[in-house]
Length: 384
Image (tube, rainbow, N blue to C red; front, side, top):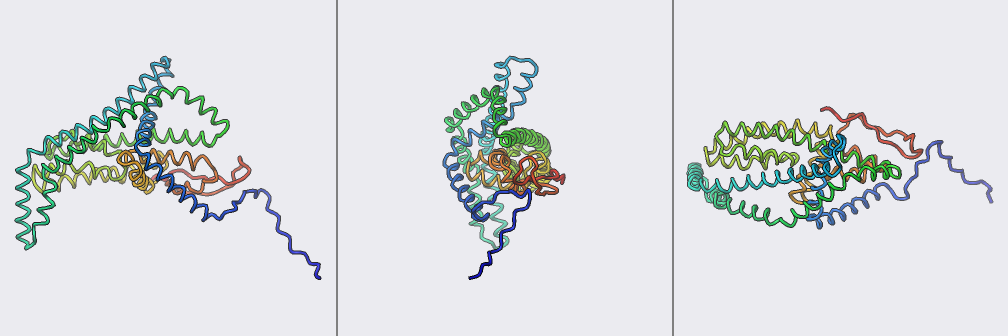
């Protein structure tokens, strides 16, 4: 019987005390994906509650500097809170009233072009016939965009907006509690930072990132609105100020907002000046909005909140699917919140960070403050 002993395992290297999971990384990712699907189904089912609550949170974060400034300058606490609350309600009222006014003006304007719509349909049918093509299918398609059809559809949209009084009441109520709870937020974060410093830091980044995103988006939206209003005025499109404000609102929809904003003025260009005017509106809108919203704005947003352009677009798709139209407006804040809660707050998920950020260089190095694990370091967002 041999007395030879099996070779002993090599002792772990000094400092290599990183715990290893009993499950393979691929299985962990698969289980995480399954959990994400389950959570997504729950979010979609509760979209009527989550979307207004998240909008209230975003507006509360937007007016935080107002209350902070007021308290710093010696205002009474109740007055600072009331001022911030009034500002939040004013922003909400402006957005809702502006959207409703745009739709109402559009609905009231379209019946004036009923005769023009029939002329355009006849012109298109004649052109199709000259090419020996059947104009029946095209005519059927054009019937769907006749003023009467559009008025009916837009009236349904207005009815849905006015019928959302319950959701609006919920939104206003939640915003009241969020804003009035702000004065106690500082002590709570201080207590959290003592027990969970990573989570407290990541939540602070979420608040700061959301504020910066809203400021940058509003700034570029104002630039786009001014340029679009001037272009529409020079082209003779009716209600240029209305469509300029509409382009400001749609600028908060990442990547594809200008596509939504161009539809009303392009249609009015068709009815007012024919196909050439419509194409001119589309070309000018595309040059102005694509240049600013697709090439310039994403670079500043990425540098401000740490989200790459592709992640911003995927956020738009996912949150619109889960939360509906409000998800399109809240895509970036929702993604920042998910990142703060599940990625930035735990060093073990640092490997996910490169999927979010546009960075120059990324490397993993030992974390001297934790004794175990690694820390993800970056050289900052790419300027281009």
